[in-house]
Figure 1 (cartoon, rainbow, N blue to C red):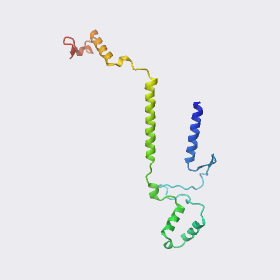
Figure 2 (figure 1 turned 180 degrees about the vertical axis):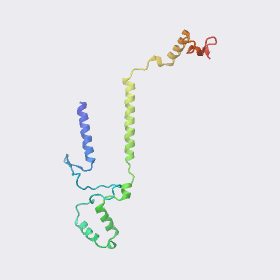
Figure 3 (figure 1 turned 45 degrees about the vertical axis):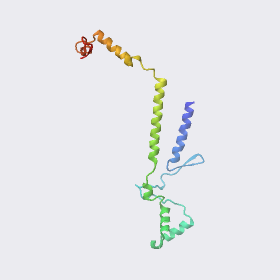
Length: 171
């Protein structure tokens, strides 16, 4: 039963993980791996010029814009320049460097697992570990000290040496 559950969880996580891996696309539940030897597009700040443009398949409007690109750039409007940029790149550098809220997910995951660990420790204390021995109680320890003093345990350099028997208190 546990193996079946673990297997199902493992396959779910594997499917989710492969869906997030670049170069692996899932069509109809089957994995169709892309050829990693072919040029690929990446939005990364450390690699400013990707191997291929963002849009491979151009519409008629995109093709006419590409023809205008070959002419003088002074004749292009700002919107056309932005559209040309978006044909080659998906994100600008400020968009790539924009902070994400991923740290919240990481901290939430850490707190979740810390809480789960705390619940496991609490459950073990309640249901797994035996009760504390009575020798840990203060009353028992006081009786043990009195017994050791009555027996005069190690009277030269040890425990009984620090007790004043005439006054009945510690030296």
